[in-house]
Each structure stands twice: as C-alpha cells, then as structure tokens.
Image (tube, rainbow, N blue to C red; front, side):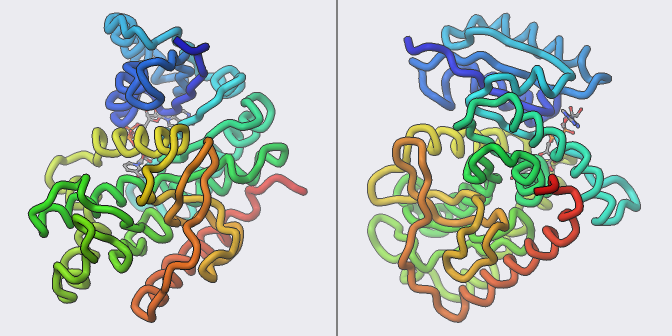
Length: 328
Ligand code: NAI
C-alpha cells in the first residue's frame, strides 16, 4: 500500500456526495493500492446528517479508507489536501435571477478558492461539480493567486459519458468501442458535443449515422439530458454525476488511454480561438498527472459556430462575476 492521500469533498451530505464518497473510499477513483483520508465539508445545519454518512463509511470497513475528517470549517477541510471535489453549491431557487445565482455561488467558491490557496498541497487537483460549474471553478481559481491556475477544472465528463452512451446505443456498439468524443465549452445547454473526430470500432462515427440524427437528435439529447433526468426521477442526476467525477479525477491522476482522449473543463489558453482564461471544455490527454489540450483538430463551420456560442456564454458569465475575483 502507498502512503495515504487526502481527498476533500464539499456538499458531502448531499445526493451526489452519497453516491460519491463510498466509491472514492473503496478505491474506485485512485486505485485499490491507494489509501485515502476523506475530508468532508458541509454547512453547519447538515453536520448531523454528515455524521450519519461518516458512520456508514466506517461501517463499510474499506481497506483503502485511512481516515475521515468531517467539518463545517473550510480551512480544516482543505488542509494539506491532494484532491478537492467541490460539489456543494447553491441551487437556483424560485424566482432567482441568474445574477443572484452567480452571486450566491460567489459567496461559496470565492472563500473556498482562498482556503485552497492557503491550505491545500501546491499541486492540488480541484474539480468543480457544483453548478454553474465552469464559472464556479473560475471564481475559485481567481481567489487562489498562489496556486497554478491549471489546478482548477470543471466537470464536463458527465456530458462526455452521456455522448458515449447515446452513440453506443445508436450504433449497437459498446461505449468502450467509441473513442475521441469531445464536449466543447460550458456544462450547460450551449455545450457542443462533437462527433467529427470520434470513431466507433475504428470507423469514423459520422459515417455510421446520418447528419439529421447527429444534429436534431444526438446533440439536443446530450445537451438536455440533465433536464430529462430531473423530469423522470424528480431529482437531478446523482449517481451518474458521481461516477463522472470519479472518472475525471482518475483520468487526471492516472492518465488517458493510448489513442483516446477525454473532455475536461480547463482554463483556456486561447487554443481553437477560445477566449483565454475561461474554463472551457476541451479534448485533453493526460500523462504523469498533467493534462494537455489535443491540438491540430480540423474545425469546420458547423463546429466553429457552436464552439463560439458556448464561448460567448462563458465570457458573459465571467463578466457577471469579475467583481468576485481577488484583487491582483
Ligand atoms: P444536494 O442539494 O443534494 O447537495 C448539495 C449539498 O451541498 C447539500 O448537502 C448542502 O448542504 C451542501 N452545501 C451547500 N453549500 C455548501 C457550502 N458552502 N459548503 C459545503 N457544503 C455546502 O445537491 P446534489 O444533487 O448533490 O448536487 C450538487 C451540485 O452538483 C449542484 O450544484 C448540481 O447542480 C451539480 N451537478 C453538476 C453536474 C455536472 O455535470 N457538473 C451534474 C449534476 C449535478
């Protein structure tokens, strides 16, 4: 067994938390040879419920669970952490304007960014799941001036996995036979699920499906999948979101497979003409814990328009939260 690493999870008593913690503790995220110490953060009123979750974690007697810290103090939660999964966020309430939502989340992700800056390991890997995930990640990053901006990422892996599943169903193949799918942009309905470079069993995906299905069925289904799940289940995706968070972190820690890539929301460096700085979904490969944007992909007019639309939304969101960034 290796030395334990510390993994922080915020919103730990919520529904994604409940689907996530047991899998992290069981070694699904970092491997069965990597013990973890969980650092669980909740708001004060949720601490009794969190204690129940801690009791259950202990009752699983997982070989890879080396300890649990449960707290409502962000500075304790992020002390020396190697990984941080920021799941807890303020949902949009009735009558709440987008501006109010961004403001309420700024009050969460600003202080969390600062606490990561002050207490986390210098190479901490941060994944923001709580919505609006890309812009919440940007707020946290902009309050952590001493950390590498590349430490901060947002989750578009659930959208990536949804795209795999839709294409597998359509082509009658398994998701493992599909490579090089991309989710560009924001984790919102403007995201662009791109199949132009994807292959199914080694063949170009777009040769196997017709353009009308791609445009009028596949893209909207992936974009609207979150809403479809809320309608069917009466609650937002939780187990699939937790599973995607595990996939995102496992890939970041352990790397991508040869001949494939994944989608991650990462700080734009201007690649593919996207505004530098916004947290944008890109195709990435990962090696030795470092991600790199896949370069040199051909982008046609169809893709260009959609990539720009989701970039525009992210620039607008950034415009609404710039006053929450730490002064430079
Ligand atoms: P939930 O409401 O069941 O749980 C959220 C938990 O966060 C609650 O227990 C709450 O007490 C806690 N919390 C709130 N503020 C906090 C703070 N400042 N510090 C620590 N904990 C805090 O929500 P659920 O279903 O677990 O979803 C969590 C977030 O994930 C939501 O914002 C949701 O929209 C988002 N989400 C993102 C997805 C993605 O693909 N990026 C997919 C699905 C959900």
